[in-house]
Length: 179
Image 1: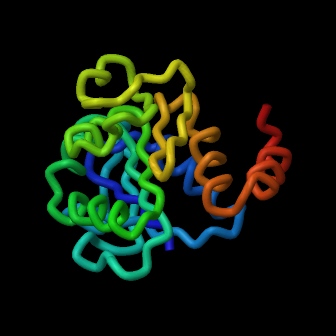
Image 2: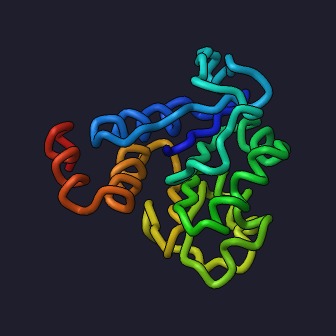
Image 3: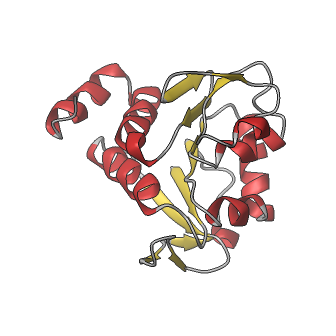
């Protein structure tokens, strides 16, 4: 199971575009509401999540995804469950995926030390110990980071590639007419 954490103030396209791409690839994804089952995106759209954070299953994790947005990123970082979910994912060696401002959460935890990573411009200092990439989407081991909303499809495709392989990602790319 892939878990996509959503907190009030999340960037809607950074969450829902990768969700769509993953679903097209047949990946089972659950959205996790931080503090509530209904969360409000930074644009004001409300999304009803599959589960709330206290229902998160630490034993059935294929990957976790953290969308950016403000104050969504701060709300994710302040969640004890999100912090434990990141630690758990690292311990069981599954992908931790973050886009826009959300890679800062990984940087603050020291998870980007000596890794290639990217984030939304202005958050680079928070990527403690990382080699800041010039690429828009970066996969280094089990850490996938992306620059921002403009590359959310590519972010989703990189997650599909990591979980289901290059052929699956290419099939989805062709299906949705992505360059």
